[in-house]
Image 1 (tube, rainbow, N blue to C red):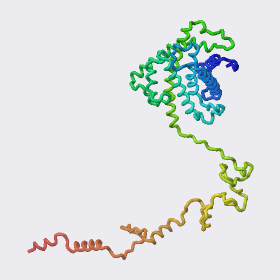
Image 2 (cartoon, one colour):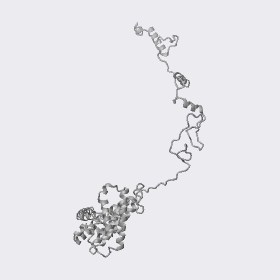
Image 3 (tube, rainbow, N blue to C red):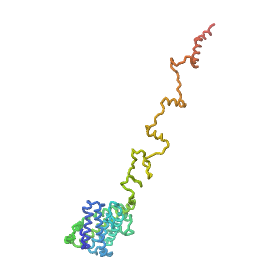
Length: 390
């Protein structure tokens, strides 16, 4: 873009539009990331150019409230798109307009809410200006949407997004806008070429000079219609993004505290506060290990106890509880305390060496012996024989 201070307002405008098309429709949209400093610096330069152009347009009063599009000079009509260009630029702008040299790595959404609010205002000014041009620019549906806003430059989310709740009519509107947009893009190819090939050092290379003024005027009006379709679509995106950003949790920036001059990396021990470094234990070859430093810091874990021998046994022991008596000793202990009973020996085997021959027989054995003696004294049948004698 030429930096000559002798440019006319028309030359400056065409150079700005040429750069605008290069950023949003050219190869730079693929090469540069939108959140890169290079891309944002281009937007910042274009915003500055279009703002200065808008100031001149307002100062010269190129557009009057009581003038229709047919009464406006053909060469003035392209300047009506200035607010639309600013709206698109602010939609994609991530920096602060007054301090555009801020690094994006801090918070890329820090100024987003402010910028899209400005973009919303620019699109509404653009659409209301087109509505003032008469019925030849905006269609009936677009005029109805603008008239439904209670506050002209501050419509609500529902007024913009939910204007038509009928799904059938909304779908038909989108199809109609798509067809119209495709038709207008075809008609405006010559205008896009006009801006791409423009060179402020050679005004003779003006392809629009070969057309009749009425045809050129219709081309400029078609451009306004195309940008009006884009403006309504961008307004819907903006109000939805505002709603998302308004619910975004606030990010608190932690202030950087000045470093304590008493702290330095060369010191062997930091005795004044928290340190992420591991604390080193005293050397093993020291006879007396310090448990607490002079500043009260614990150097190694310790336990206060009165039973040193018990701790010594735990330290130098096996780490397990070992048995303190044999199995035989344990059984004797259990028997002595009545926790176990001796098993009675029944039916000891005959011929045992420990058997005592003088032991008294049991009652059962004695009864058996008496029975055997009685049978010997009273043989079988002896009683009947005595009864039959005689």
